[in-house]
Length: 547
Image (cartoon, rainbow, N blue to C red):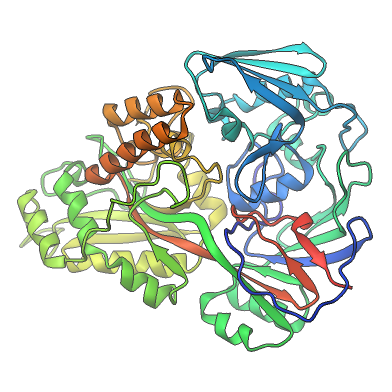
C-alpha cells in the first residue's frame, strides 16, 4: 500500500553560479510569500524511514527534523538537539535536547520520541538502520537528555545521525508503515496541506515553529518527470523554479532575460555496480548471466578491468551530458575528508579490453546462444531518475557490445528501480549489474566507504549497519579493517590517510566503476533568489521572493 505515495523534491549543490539581477527589495523572513517548484519526480513516501532517496528525503525534511542538521558547508549543527558531547574513548555520546518544541499536532517533543524513533529506525524495513552501526544501546537520562553507547568507537557519529528524522511517539506507536506514510507529523518548518499524487504537494509554513520562520508561507511542489515539460513550465511562468534543467535546454534558457540559471557541482556520483564477489549472483528474472563456463564472469578482476577500459567516460560526459558533468575515478568528492587525488580513470582502450577478456578465459563464441559474444549480462538502470540516465545506460551497453559482451537493458521508472535494487529486497538482490547514483552530504569519506564498500553478504551485513548500499556485495577484509580504524580516529588528518588507502584498494579491485559527478542545474524566475544546498535537497527556506 504503502510506499509509493507523494511528491518528489530534491536539490543539492555545491557552489552557486549566476543569478544577477538589478537590486530589488527582498521580503524579510516571516513576511510571507507563495512559490511553485517543478521537481523531476514525486515523493516515494512520507514515511521518512522507507527510502533513503534525495527527492523523498528533501520533501520529508519539510515536515520532520533530526537531532543534528547540516549547514551549507556540510558541517553538523544543532537541530532538535541543542548540543552533544562524547567521552574520551568515543564509546558514549550524550545529546541534550531542545525544550519547548512541539509536533505539528501540538504534542510535546521529549526524549521519549527520540527513543521511539531510534527503535523504529532499526526495524528491517528501515533504510536508516546503518545509523546504529556499532551502537550497543541507548537510553533516556531525563526528558531532555539521551545517551548512546557503542561497541566500537565512531568519531563521526553526528554526521551519521543527521539524516534520522524524529517521529512523535504518541502519534505513531503501534502504527504500520502505511499509516505513517499517510499521516506526516513532525516538528519541521512546514506542514503538509495537500497532496495529489503525481500532481502536487502543498506545504504551509508552521507558524508555531521553534526557530526562525522562513519567508515562504506556502510552497507547491509539482512533480514534472518529462524534461521538456519542466522547461516549458518555467518558460510559461507556471512554476517559479525548476530542478534538473535538461542539459540540452541550458543555453536556450540562459538567453531568456526573465530567467536565471543556477549551476553548481553535484555531490551525486553516477556509477556501475556488479556482483563480482559471489559464485552465484542473484538471478535476473528476465535475462540471467549466461557464460560459456557456467560461472559468474564478474568474479574475474580482468573482466572488471576490461569493462572499465571498454567505456569512454569522457565521450559520455561530452556528448550525452553536454559537458554538464565531471568524470571521476572515485565515489568521494574532492573536498571530503579522505579524498585520494592519486586515483585516476583508466584509459579508454577497447583493444586492451578485448585482450583482458581473452586472458580471463572468455573468448568470442563461434556457435550456440552466445555466437558472436563472450557472455551475456543484464544492465538494470532507471529511466527517469538521473539526468539522461536512459541514454547513458544505452551508451554503456553499446560500449560493452563492441568488446563482445552481450547486454540486455532493463530500464525502469524510479519508483520501481529503488525497490528492485534494495539490499533488503524481499525477493533477494535481483540485480547483478546496475547503473545507479549516490550522494552523501557528510563531508566524510569514511561515511561513504562504510555505506558503499564495507563487506556485505547476500544473506545480510557482515557487520550490522555497515555496507547497506554495497549492492555488488564487495568483500575485502583489509578495507573493512581500515574503515574500522578510520571511524575510531579523532584526528582528521590521520583519518584522511586511512580513508585514502580505502579508495586506493577499492579502485585496484575495481569494486565499482564510477562514471561522473552530475552538475546541479536549476532555472528560476527573475523574482526568485534560490540558494541551493550542497546536497541538492530543495528546501522552501532556501528560496527568497524579491518584492
